[in-house]
Image (cartoon, rainbow, N blue to C red; front, side, top):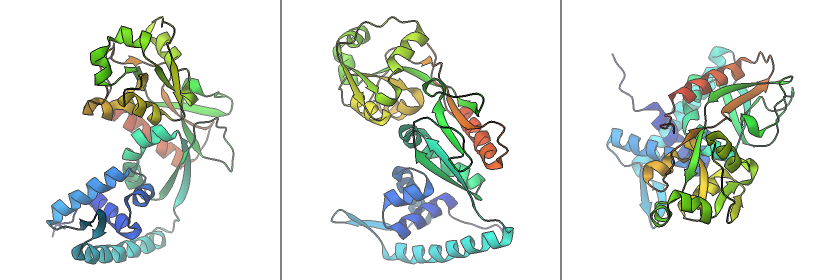
Length: 299
């Protein structure tokens, strides 16, 4: 007889939320965004046809039905967690991955749940880091970087390209109505991220465009801060297609000049000749996800 079960990812999201009582720690545990947890719970409610959560005076709590269902799920997940290592004879393996926080938040975290579903025996730990990385036996196993922004030594590390990058100037629709893109590049502040401070220079080099001197520059510590500043009309930024796609789709940003290929693709760094099968699994998954990510029309 065929089993009729609710979506398993939705069950995981609801169980984690019920256990923590908050979206953010549940999302951190599952390595997804809190928005993804919220959507999965909504999906579960629609599948079951019952309300699992209710908001009273601005506070979200489990309904009575939600409490009963959460209790049943806690017991089932506890039993499954206990049975799996004993059955397989294997303990979960830890894989530490360094990744810039903005790329992690915008691209990696919404997808990494699929990696965990494919490789439940691998506990992937994502660490916010954009600095230099060098392989070490006791250190992180791998790192995601942009090739030209890090001093990669070919003698100690392999750099596997898993996704091309496309970049171009982005600004808010309000600014675009008041300024042509050429006027904007000349008169408006240029926004940049301090850790990737060459983004304007790199875009000019990749497109063969000679940029006029900036009227003013404003730097931010994180790329998502730079993107947020652009959506709020503080100036013009160089947008990375994979990072600004949600804002483009929502209409918060526009790209008058479109996007051009960058000479600095996204790469996975790992020790040269590293036989670690978990790193290989991660590399294969990243390449597949990168190839499945939509690319923009290229100017």
